[in-house]
Length: 209
Image: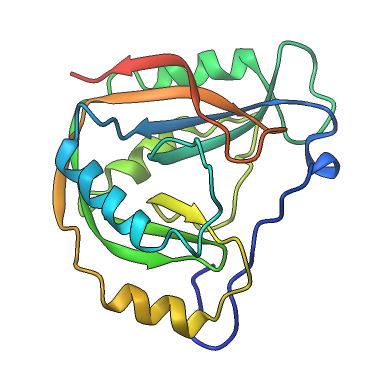
């Protein structure tokens, strides 16, 4: 998962990942949207860090800064066909389970890297996100995700197989972000699985007390 010092990053290729989406397009998830008007200081720092790595990252990304909470899968109103299909009725179950959730704070700490993506690390000392994810679990559906959850804000995917040592050295030279933000909204939405790094579209916003 994390970038190791010896080796190379894993690039994202410009192609249609049809073996994954099977012609489907609406890939649903729960997420926290990091909006420019709500968190201007954080966005300014993320933009600056992203720009300093621009020659290493996939260009023309339209994906907004966000924190993924739970990856649902391909949204459908029909009976599931594939194991990563997600029924709209399951969303309603999840929504009801979140209704008592209150606002909370997160600390956006520093720059880090997975093997395929540059990201800002998040400290969640009171485990708010773990509690949220527990409430999003369903009896009839398993999350479509890696086994270990690590909250983060993606700054970009790598465009080429750059040296890990070069990436990590560049990260060490960057200042820490170290900003606290208050989270008072959760979104359920989707991106188009047939558009590489396309924008997120919100279908539902839960306002937290």
